[in-house]
Image (cartoon, rainbow, N blue to C red; front, side):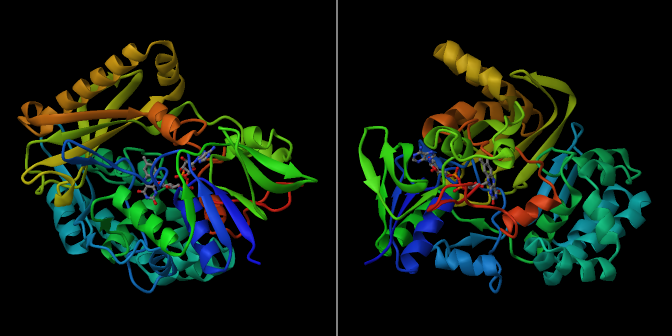
Amino acid sequence: MKKSIIIIGAGMGGMSAGIYGQMNGYETQIFEIHTKPGGQCTSWKRKGYTFEPCIHHFFGCKPGSSVNQMWHELGALPRELVNIEECTATASPNGKMFVDYYSLDRLKETLLKLSQADAKMIEQYIGAIKVFANDKVDDAINSGSLWKMIPIFLWKPSILKWMKMNMRSYAEQFSDPFLRKAFAELIYSNPDAPLFFHLLRHAGGMNGDIQWPISGAGEFAKSIERRYLALGGKLHYRSRVQKILVENDRAVGIKLADGSEYRADIIISNADGRKTILDMLDSKYINETVRGYCAPIADETPFAVNVCLGIDRDLSGEPSSLVLLLNQPVTIANHQYENIEAQVYGFDRSMAPAGKGTIKVELWASYSYWKQLYNADREKYKQEKQRVAEQVIEILESHFRGIKNQVEVIDVYTLMTWERYMGGTQGWFNLPNRKFDFSMKEDLADKKSKTTLPGLANFYFVGV
Ligand SMILES: Cc1cc2nc3c(=O)[nH]c(=O)nc-3n(C[C@H](O)[C@H](O)[C@H](O)COP(=O)(O)OP(=O)(O)OC[C@H]3O[C@@H](n4cnc5c(N)ncnc54)[C@H](O)[C@@H]3O)c2cc1C
């Protein structure tokens, strides 16, 4: 008889576990709170516009890599992909623009036009991208293995230096004041982001490993759902798992919010780790390390409030990602900004009616600020979202003249929205309480990480 698996959550992790389970002869079923697949990997339609909260960079497009093979196995590829020309761009209030083109010739030309005085630094930046574009470097970093990294460090000792730097410390080496400011903001307007992440990302876009899956995350998730169902998997939507059933320290099943119970040989959770450990398992299977992962996350997080706009304007000639540096700091919903970043989806014509386009602006925000507002007064919460949208549109107007009168649809979602649809602890920001650093890559590559809980048999975690 086939062994059975119950999976909690139809995010990327849950559906992947289901697909590989089915491929390996298990009988699997997935229970999901929401009415559609994908979890964080999602998008939705409003009046003909598709709003995309998730994918910025989709890795694994280059044939031959193990990630590419995985996407094929999961049914996510083949699909139409868009090769975007630039990694990202930054614009100053007086119209100066740095477009970080993937093409190194174009990049060099753009940078030299902005600052001849930085010729040496520009050569060094381009040299660094070339190093990270090397398959062996990519493979060594992704493996998380120090042993694989040692030959790379011996080949290019400068890598070690770059891996220790962040965007700000690297940008400070440009002499041109605009480039110093513009470069630091290239990764999601976060100057503290590690430099190597940007170099890897740029290299990925340059060699075709990062492209855009046409129509965005929602269609992408649906293709994986189709593959799972075709393999015979069962998916239950509107099914909130409340408890994991345990007998003699073995996970044996789940209990849903409506009281119904289901049993299986193996239980896998793709749900938020804190909710799984602290609520579904009543904190019974925990040690110091796991308790540490469950500690509260910072109150201020990125992508916490997003403003999506459907615009009656052709955006196809605009950079796909644009950081707008502001003349003076602006306070939006309790957070001060010196710049804002807009994702401009003009490169994907399937996301808007003909001749129109969508823009998304992602903002940092305080979780507790929005939570209090949401709990205390739903009307005020809605008004605050509207106010945020108006401020954002005003800022966009300074770069995209006339846009104010072209906005047809406004959709603002916050961490509360994610919480409502996915039941997480802090919106989508469910990450374990760990610093994102190089050692975390080992966890991502699953070299050291534990996907089990101490003392509990037949139970596994998948996903974030
Ligand atoms: C704004 C944003 C931008 C991002 N950009 C990128 C990017 O550019 N590139 C990239 O690679 N990644 C990106 N990511 C990250 C990526 O989307 C996530 O890492 C990935 O989707 C997480 O998948 P997961 O399966 O681990 O978890 P989730 O997507 O969180 O899935 C968990 C699932 O479990 C369900 N669930 C939770 N509790 C229960 C319960 N009690 N009962 C039943 N079901 C439950 C949820 O509804 C959800 O469907 C981004 C994420 C966000 C939010």
